[in-house]
Length: 633
Image (cartoon, rainbow, N blue to C red):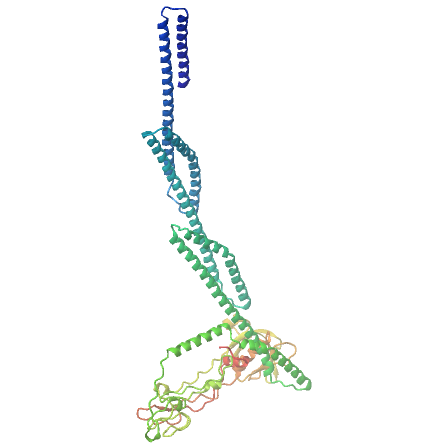
């Protein structure tokens, strides 16, 4: 039983005793007791004392209830304050080292905030009790109540502020780690793309170039597909910078690095694409040029064939073939025109040279002013460059412009020319004149070369002899004649490996036998000087057959796999069989006199006599035969 129940029970028992005393007093008074007055006085005194006791008891009960409520407020306030401070101490300062740790801390902080929300009801109850008790008390107790309420309110506000700040820091850290991970992923992906761009091999033909370009374009499509990821990452970084993130410097650096790498990837891709386009254009040009050269090589035997026909039918057949060649040549005009156009690479090279020449002209110093002319005797002491055959005094005349080259190879007539080094108008005292025509006051004979530099007066070295042609490959051979008027005993077709080197043609069974030097059936090499080689037009049983007749009377038939191979063998054998130059070139300076140089003037040397031009080298001859259009430079 509680204290309140015991107090009520005691109060009822005491009330019953007081009521019994009052009833006994009333009975004595009613019975006419001689001490009625005294009994009545005692009865009144008892009732007054009981009433005072009851009032004191109520007052005491009220004071105890108020004190209980106050102490309970103090207890609740202290307990709530302790819980708030404990929760505030549980807030960590760590934000995590990576995205996973930051997200885990963010989840823990969410649970912590839910615990804090449970304390809000206790804090609100303390504030309500403080407001109610502050009205019931005054003085020091009221101030104490306000102090407890203020302490709880301040601690609660600090806890809420710290919790919210922690949540914001964790959210910012998570966003930063997400941004860093997105940047890292994109940078790693761009490294892979850069390796793909740089690792592609150079294509060797047009089909390979097309395949490489398609693969390169697929890289561009992949880059464009990642544009949304780039935009989202850039937007995330910009938002973090706009929020004033604590790691703004690092975020700015990562954002700048990402954008720079993206621009670098775009630039690398475009440069590689431009290079691939140039390579494709060059390969297409090479393919078309090769096709054109092969076509020219196949048509060359027809044009160089000495056969003019021995009957009307043969002549008509040759005319028909020639008309077909003319039609085919007309059809090839457009292809040759396309080959003459400059490629992108050549255009860039031309523009680069023009820019270099323009820069050189701008940086070149202006020419000195011409000296004043002497009036004595009406003969000028020195003339301006325009009046001295286009050159100043003591200067060298430029070589005449070379004739146009065919396929990048100059004609032999142009290569054999020796440019004449000339001087301008004669000075007083007998300066030498321009080579070739005598001038006034000069003693230089025609044909002499005049130079103002002793180093240029040395004779020109003779042209080195051309390298002997060489060729090897597999052919089918038929031995027709063993000697003049004598047929070969075995005239069947046999596969042999032919090696043309050093002016002789050797036969082997295969390339391995040629490597070890084992001739076919022990046959000695066939000497080619003085031999005759031409297409075997009279032989109809096989195609691509040409005939070789040696100087000792032996004759062979050879079959190539196609017209181009036959033309190549014909050209090389004819070059090896052609006779050499008529004689060695005369050394310069061997004939003619020397001019008499003036005192301190230039030295004159006689020009070499004209010599027969050497035979064209095999490379130049091939270019002349197969290239009827100029190479683009």
